[in-house]
Image (cartoon, rainbow, N blue to C red):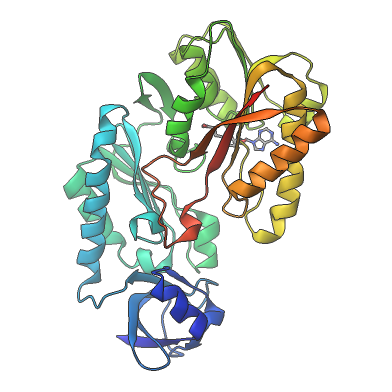
Length: 387
Ligand SMILES: C[S@@+](CC[C@H](N)C(=O)[O-])C[C@H]1O[C@@H](n2cnc3c(N)ncnc32)[C@H](O)[C@@H]1O
């Protein structure tokens, strides 16, 4: 097995069990290393630091799979998938859709697998994981016994890794549409056309939290609604009217079906840019949800993202009734909870509002947050009440 030697910064990270080592944190690696090859990492004083896979094409050149010596990486990966699935099993009491494997959060960097009512949507996003593709698929088939598996790997990430992408069924028959049941609310999932691996599973707990504040007669505005998760939960918990806003035609198509599936009678779907929509909206609401896509994929985009949030929060506060609730989410690691607090304070100040923080919210449990791996905490939200 080839060896790589780490610089001091990487040694400090490995001591904290951080799985990501950047190229500029590596002192030496063999020039003939293949993309995705399993390597052992050593400190400059020759101490063993960990075992992982290496890709010189990626900025994150080394992803650590274990901080102990391991003989059989294929068995390690299979064992971790099995453990991850076991930890999620109790979720099946309330939902037929959940994330089975969440990459670094399950110590399986580069691998994501989502379960949708018996079907699996899988992302193998790195060259290192690609080398274990057959073992992973075989284990998923034997252990989870899915009716089908669809490859939904991320072509952008894979191209950085020097990999081609071919999204297609890998096993069994994949229906065009799957219906999942989350807390007795129904959602359609299109494995082939849907965003992410098909559905925003990470917001499951937050859909429950926000909707528990609904009172009879409430009017709800679900901005960046996607398939309508937040708004539909609110309607089912007693809201009188929901307006959904999303710019994506696919999301709107799915949303129409979900409203029908859940028997919504009083709702409106607006296919528009949410920023433009807020410029002219003058109807008032008791709950506004802001759940935009990741505005800051890199730390350089953070400032722009915060300006976007300030606009969205300030304009939502203007159409929020007294005692109304505002839920704001960021799914970017680079926008911290403190950023969300500060930008909300600034928007509240500019619009003359006093806000109570009612709840802090995070991604649901099937998207584990590792203390040792800061990037695993990406979804943050705050529920405010306007006083
Ligand atoms: C993070 S997802 C929302 C997930 C959703 N709240 C849920 O729980 O399923 C962000 C959504 O914003 C939509 N979107 C992106 N840019 C937009 C824009 N400028 N205006 C309106 N919608 C937008 C995307 O189509 C996507 O559906």
